[in-house]
Each structure stands twice: as structure tokens, then as C-alpha cells.
Image (cartoon, rainbow, N blue to C red):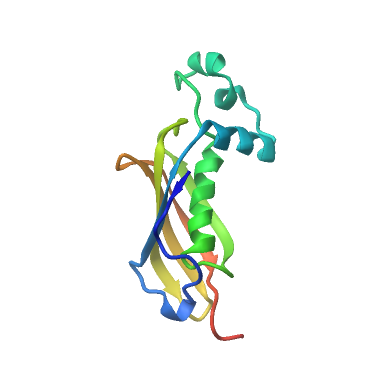
Length: 148
């Protein structure tokens, strides 16, 4: 279930400003985790088997880290900068597990803009109840009105 009232589309390079933010909020469901396991072929039992997961350091099932990271990609590809954005790189630091039933809030913020090269650095994070569970930095090529 996606709870998202932010605008979608494209913010062109020429309209981007340092400090600009966009985000989304999503409830992580059992179905999300199962579908991600199928698509990614990552069937690690820490994600799918409660009995197994209870015996791990997490004491229960957790969502795939890359499922949470994928929400960052969704904001970048749909909102900031949006359609036409090309990913160049992403760092990720996983700080806490995300569990089925958690409401995840993802935030992306423009940190730096290199207009000449069309490169944009974005600060990225995912939070649960205001506490970071994932932080990183993305580097992208932003769409431009000018065809170089």
C-alpha cells in the first residue's frame, strides 16, 4: 500500500535547486516481501520463514534491504528528478531492519548540482517512525530541456 501525495513527473535540471526534497510513504506488506523474493530470486529464509528468522540476530522476519532501497529508486525515477533520470551510482548504509507491517518514509534531497555535466548528487534515506533505517547518496544524470 502506497501512501503518497507528492507530485510525479519530471523536474528538469534547469529547475532543480539544492535543498529540494521529495518522498513517499509505503506500508511494507507480507506480499511485498514475497513478490520481491520471486522477482529478485532472493529466497533467504530470514525474509520468508518466521521460525528460521526468530533464531537470527533479527528475532523475526525482515524485508530485503534492496526492497527498501528500491523505494529510493522510485522517488528518483518518478519525482526527483523524475522521468528521464539515469542512475550513475548509489551508496547504501543499512542501519536497522524493516519488518512486515512497517510504514517506511523515504526522502530524497538535492545535495549538489553540476549543470555543465548534468550530474546531480542526492542524499537519500528511509525512516520508520522518524528513525533512519537506510541512508545513502545517489548520483544521477538529470533530464534537461536542452539536447546536448
